[in-house]
Length: 88
Image (cartoon, rainbow, N blue to C red):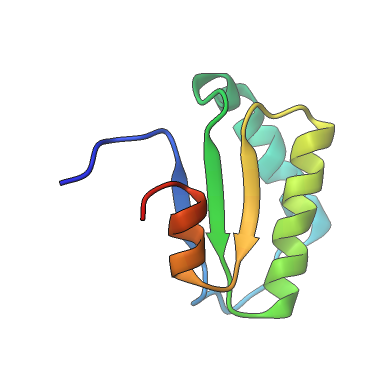
């Protein structure tokens, strides 16, 4: 088995709804205090629709504005996300 990391993969390809900008801000405000526990960690979002990609990029931009200590990126491919996380 592989070793444990602080990196996270969210597979949201089955989402049937989109997030509002207010919900995105709520998510960022919620995870901000927890980001100090994951310095330099990565979070990969695997999405299936262009709209999901736009939403997750908004999360990434807000994360930078709020100075989260980890990276967030969006992928259409599970394999690409795993590679970016260093898990493949």
